[in-house]
Image 1 (tube, protein in one colour):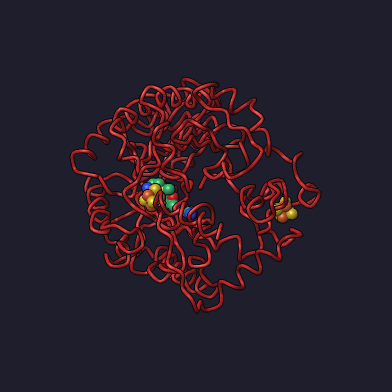
Image 2 (cartoon, rainbow over the protein chains, first blue to last red):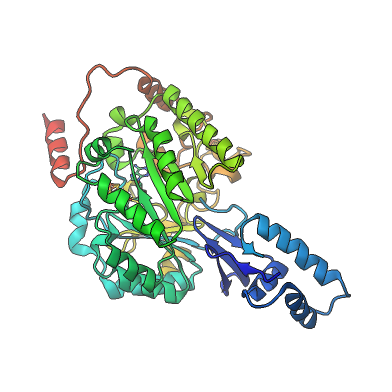
Length: 85
Length: 381
Ligand SMILES: C[S@@+](CC[C@H](N)C(=O)[O-])C[C@H]1O[C@@H](n2cnc3c(N)ncnc32)[C@H](O)[C@@H]1O
Ligand code: SF4
Ligand code: SF4
């Protein structure tokens, strides 16, 4: 699976809020830290395992924790229409 | 229509009213009655660019380019390009009149993300009568052009007595075209709509019927028969619950009028005793954070005791200031749409009258520069 942000959505780092925002017609979602980090890696080129790898290198977490979080996030984000997998 | 989970205090939603000029003459238009007086004072391209830059620095992310008819500004492409470079999510709010294939392509190339198109009826006869121009065919053509380019689209249907029965037909058309969002927006009664209120205001029965139509479409959506997101709210007049107007005064919304006057909402200029500092004279940072205008109804301190002691004040912020002023004469009063307001009887009376058949129909006053003068003369007589 190679996740990408759905075309209607735009991800943006917002200095004024120190957070990633997801912009879409009629709305704004302020993402929490991990959701922002994950989405920022969804460029349509990286596969899900590559995204997990990248996060694992950045954040020192026990094996499996990041992977589980990432897959849980993808299923939620997909149901909200944010990402295509 | 903002997500309530977002943090408060930043002007995330910016509406730039580029001009009040417009080829249509809607009798419910929210523009000021003296809209023609603004033409000579419109901000120029560089002034708008500066405003956009400053707003973005303050944390604005969603930009609505509105009016009047924004397509009448021939620097629209330049402003869209500037906004996109700054990182705005830019939405064109238009009647569709004046949109051409070439113009749309140029706007998309400049970074336009979304189009909000207004449409009032499913037939040319009714639309054209309501907006007092041959606009229906142009609006349908605009919708087709936008969808052909895959841009997300919001259909805005301003609702009133004359077109409540159009919802079903309009939704059928919108579903077929693949429109993503439909705002079935019961009009707000300010300015032109207030002038025509007696004619425009629907009965509660008609609203309930409309609500059922919308409910059926929502059910169909859940069954996967269409992909539209529908917004429909029974107006606050009828529910006894005030709206959380603008999500609070000076909280997340900022509107700039064509002449550079910043407003907490598009109607704020009806309020007396407020000083409106122009973006020509002040930085947007000062205007948003320091100006008496934006502080005037921020938070809870200004509230009447009715609201200050009410547990719902964080939900609705005491309702709408403009409505409070227009119906009670006091802008700091509890919104009379609220059943707890001492002035709620007035609203109840207006809605009761809306339920009765009108025996003597008055012609709708069309938005026109001369209409206001006619109105003023009548008052003198
Ligand atoms: C003032 S118009 C300007 C843009 C463009 N001329 C148009 O009509 O789409 C902005 C939006 O406000 C809506 N509108 C106009 N009068 C209104 C009112 N009294 N209450 C609520 N919405 C209104 C229009 O349908 C439109 O979607
Ligand atoms: S609501 Fe009608 S009259 Fe008012 S600006 Fe829009 S199209 Fe023009
Ligand atoms: S009394 Fe004021 S705060 Fe309470 S519900 Fe009514 S308008 Fe809202």
